[in-house]
Image 1 (cartoon, helix red, strand yellow):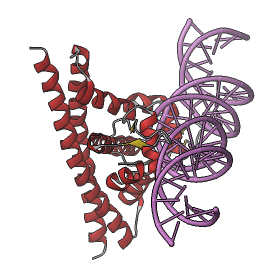
Image 2 (spheres, chains in turn cyan, green, purple, yellow):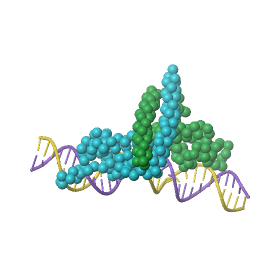
Image 3 (cartoon, helix red, strand yellow):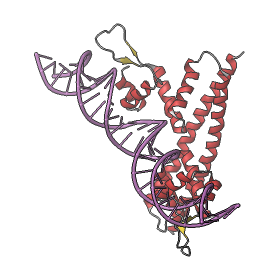
Image 4 (tube, protein in one colour):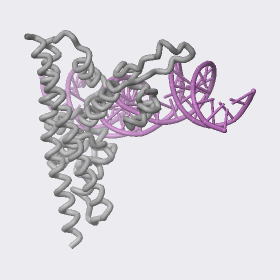
Length: 120
Length: 120
DNA sequence: ATAAAGTATTTACTATGCTCTATACTTTGT
DNA sequence: ACAAAGTATAGAGCATAGTAAATACTTTAT
């Protein structure tokens, strides 16, 4: 599929997709049979990658961090101990963030209660 | 307490605290008895506010959003229905993000497994 | 054939959230 | 008294993550 279809399937803008491609997070391939253009073709793996990017962005990971995740998940042949440590640290980070989430959610719920009680 | 102490108690840099103060998220008061300077004094409420800011930043809320949270929690006298809706939407946002968190954590755990199995 | 739409590339621009520098004044320690 | 440290203000600079504009070429639809 070409970038337009990819954009529609993922909900990401064409600009953003190209931005990610420039960062090396995804890679489209030009059809070697077609010499007249260098249109890039994307496949299911690209969609998977973009979905991971979107999820991890929501979690607050930077694109640089996400790039490492993608490499380890899809490309990495060798298993470096520092990579393992990195991801174990990230898992702990997520657990910590979960706590912040619960606290913030709690505060927001209290604010909602407050607003509703003021109405009485 | 002065800004230096506030910085130490919260772990935020003096620069960052001043940045938040310029945005109107916290407010220090100058001692009216002292005319020679305009050093600002901060109290426990400021610490509470900064802690909320830090939590909500972790959750991914923008400073503009957090400012609204602070206003509704500490200052707001009137209870606007649109404010209630805003916060209810934010709670849903958090719930959604929680799901992304679990998915991303899951992926990271799989990557860790993969790395460890490659080692065998 | 040709206009409209799609694609690629490069470059510039923007928003957010800091972070740092420069300057000037005040307080504190000795 | 005087150096060192603290405070305030204004403005510059920076990193991240986009977003948009300009240009040129290609494909598609009529």
